[in-house]
Amino acid sequence: APSLLWLRHDLRLADNPALHAASDGPVLPVYVLDDAAAGRWAPGGAHRWWLHHSLAALSAALEKAGAPLLVLRGEATALIPRLAARIGAATVHAGRLHAPWARQRDAAVAKALAAEGRGLELHNSALLVEPDRIRTGQGNPYSVFTPFARAVMALGDPPPPIPAPARLRGVAHPVQGEALDALGLLPRAPDWAAAFPEYWTPGEHSATARLRAFIEDIAGGYEHARNIPGQDGTSRLSPHLHWGEISPRQAWHMAAGIGDATARQAFRRQLIWRDFAHHALWHRPDLPERPLRAAYADFPYQPDAALLRAWQRGRTGYPIVDAGMRQLWRHGWMHNRVRMITGSLLVKHLLQPWWDGAAWFWDTLVDGDLANNSMNWQWIAGCGVDAAPYFRIYNPVLQGEKFDPDGHYVRAFVPELAKLPRKWLHRPWQAPEAVLREAGVALGRTYPRPVVDHETGRARALAALKSLKEAE
Ligand code: FAD
Image 1 (cartoon, rainbow, N blue to C red):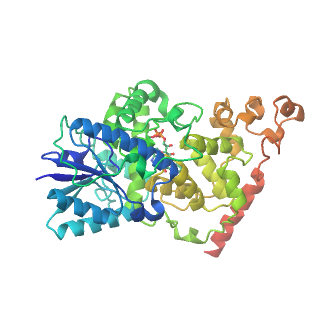
Image 2: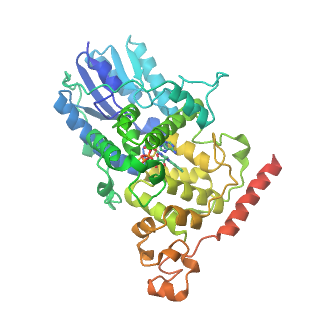
């Protein structure tokens, strides 16, 4: 009997267990854009740009393999069972999703299918290890990363990747699909994604090529280089992994090609962080909305639209922060070290709620991922699983000087400071007047003064924390 292959976050042919299971017989691959089910977690703007191009790549690959992709828009809970009935599929195969809304939707689809004697079979296509597979000695989910990582490692290498099928037997589309352009996923005027293609090529082919290039040319010094935002020192696989253009198992196995054992371990450890975030979301579906440490529910944030805006636009007056926020806007991505620095400034110096930062990232990141984004924001805000303590407050000047010592990163994204000498680049407000003039910088005019002084911001953050503890 034919199968329905419902593609979601596994937009690839290789190492796709759902595709593998469905390809025994004739198969109809379908993608459904279902914003209603996702609600406030529908893909953000930058995400949609990626999705458009990823679907275009997938569609071409499936067509070539013999089973053209059907693209639909609407409520999957109705569309999927109807489609399965139309082609007489006994089983719908899909990759398991971990977001709470998607789990609810899958349960509803499974129920509707079961009522007609059909099944929904979910496969692990997104993670090294499914969230229910490992538990602590007490039988609980993990809430600390290191023992979680140890448990994942103890399972040994994940199963080897499944090769892409050479040939698929397609099923004639029983309904008219949507043309990709008609989904309206790309920005219209203004085209804020104009610079994305300088940086990204969505799709399975380029995901594999990028990983190969990383392993061959970049990964050598990864454990150090991963902290230097001015260098191309990380894999930049995050959007590819998010959309499942490559699987973490493929990344894990290909990483065997990293000669330097320390770098190889460090890279695989990051893949485990990704699993850890999904483990956290699976067991704590309120992760995107509520602090996991209940005491933080009353943290005295001081929401302020103007401060939030200054941060979003990269106009805080702290060069490393502004460079990060502008990289995010320009390329839909930000280096991990700078995500930590910008996030910390927002929730500590500026006392803005972490969920406002998370919402901005959600809309502007091409890799915006409910598990990773939520877990990492709670980590920064000190209220999540295995989080950094709130009292550890980054100094944005020292962070800049340590991780962008030559200023390559700041100069690339904050051009109005490009001519400042290294010595003052991360602290322009302390530069002598003559130096500023020489570099063409007029503080308060061409580049802002710090929105809050570091010591003042730090003291205010610590006072907020103290008031919370006293209220406990
Ligand atoms: P590499 O260093 O090459 O790492 C390889 C892979 O490991 C990444 O692609 C990613 O899938 C995974 N990984 C690395 N670091 C982390 C981490 N801290 N948590 C979870 N997985 C990790 N990552 C997202 O994919 N989506 C997000 O929405 C997201 N939001 C974040 C928000 C904040 C405030 C912070 C501090 C981090 C966030 N991260 C997020 C994690 C991390 O910054 C990115 O995964 C990383 O920068 C991606 O770059 P890369 O692919 O070059 O990483």
